[in-house]
Length: 488
Image 1 (spheres, one colour):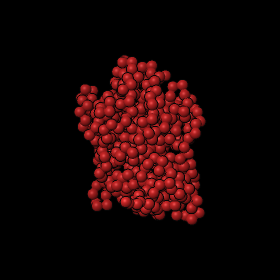
Image 2 (cartoon, rainbow, N blue to C red):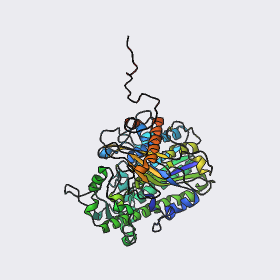
Image 3 (cartoon, helix red, strand yellow):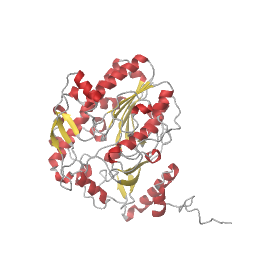
Image 4 (cartoon, rainbow, N blue to C red):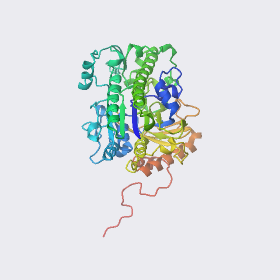
């Protein structure tokens, strides 16, 4: 069994036809979903690139591997996994597999993908590295024009400066785009692996559709902005919510741009997804051409979602909304049934699943669960909720989340906690944490989150011990060790 892992960056679940977007043009991913398993409750362990990718690499939750921030905005956290940390590509290599990664690395600063056994070009950073020597050589070898952009879209920062670039028109043919280049290098490596005959793990990590959305005319203008339905959370007031969310909205300059610009940004974002879908189609077509379809499991997912105007925000950050925590997750295993699953699963679970499909032990991926029973159509006992965590971006900002069928709880030590009724308020506009009638739900979820954090040894639970009624504890919550001490 070979493993093909297709991954995007900052990808909203509602950009795909398979997840209900009637305007989406994503035929290749929709077909993958139609013929495989589409997970409707697939979550990221944390909505930020480097920590989530380090979790995929290790099968450890972010609090455990401690690589908690992107290098570009790091505020003092570790930037590389400690020596000796278990990673799945090293396990595959040790057991005779080829392992390749083409595209975004961003799971460490000093260490590259090659340090963990991956073949492929070294492509660090958070955005398309259009000055990378291998990409420049690709352009030269194929007589393709260099990167050039216009029609930049950005707002104005609170200090009066220019906001972050959000989108731009790219003056290159599709064959010159970084996305096309990544698919080409993937296909070359797949052909090499097929010729060698060893089982392989091959990953393509696209840098998009992460902002800024920089795409050629055909994709920049693909979707008519007038047809775009704005998210209901565009009506966000931030009333009764942590003040940091309003500050982040100002940082992302939402209110400095007309609403028509937001429609255009959403339209260009969807166009970017189409560009990537087409490149995924090229990769899958070559897999079929090589006769590998019936012996290759295909994954598609991303590291986390994107706001794209939802809650008057862009990018991601200290707001644990569904927009950035619930993501697409599709897996097609040869011979397994086509199905839709509603269990709560995680990007973290890919690590154990990869090892399980490779016939290797999964125990060192300590926070990961194999999805193989679900993929085979079985109905094992499964956890009925899921935990998310966040540690900061631009500044330290700890959060924990518990998501269950109807409700979501977010613990924010700096200000107010959040509770959302996702059945009656799917857009998470009304924080009902302090509503008196929600006391039974609030109390139950606080205790459940506390229990899960204690079981994982996520020491965020110490804050909860003193601040909330979490019931009886079987340890000294003060950690002083002095109450019963005696000295001789």
